[in-house]
Length: 121
Image (cartoon, rainbow, N blue to C red):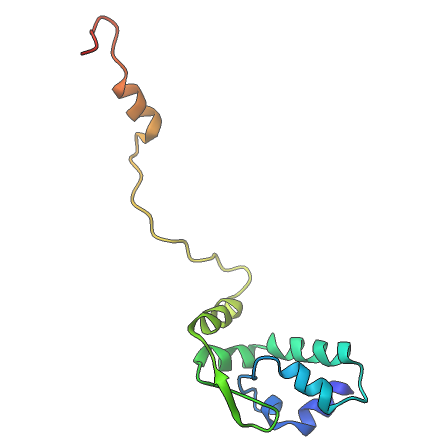
């Protein structure tokens, strides 16, 4: 019911545009007849929807309840949205590392130790 009301009243939600930061506070003020906790839950659910995440990942302007630009989506926020869109069972991208010597660190340490009958210099 409350979600239907928000989607019916505010185009920015229906159009899945990037929302202004703190928009839940504006909604709470605009919809004082509803429980603030429910409003915050509707906003949180909206922001997890794939369509919203795609919009956020594209970047650009953020919008207030009236559809007016209010801020920009940061590069960090875009990256976070991209990560949230990845399938849960997909392996996370691992950072590139230098190849590991097949002998490993134990073999390197053993090679550094003097052999029986050899004097240390």
